[in-house]
Image (cartoon, rainbow, N blue to C red; front, side, top):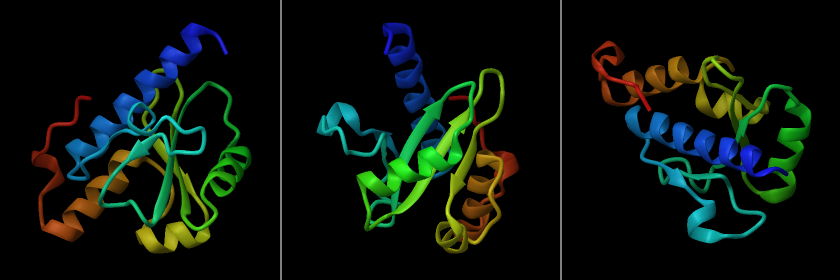
Length: 132
């Protein structure tokens, strides 16, 4: 993997962590804290113990491969992949059990997080700033 590709991945992890944090789910890059090949890309205490979070900042989508990676890395946790292409919004991908647990359809990550925030805390998502 080239240095540019690694840097793009790190930027993606920071963006995704900032997006989760801005939506009320404090998160940080996990690799810098744990250093294990099998650690999640992002640690989010609200979701830890339930989801293994991977971040993909790529142009070619490969959902089944990403879900398989999550399952291989953490077989006891539900897979949650946060991804985006260049100049596109963040989206998420999980399996059927994860989607049921989140209680919302798969799709635009910002919309998903805002719906969760609204439902959990009664906060109007239109009043939040989200510029990671």
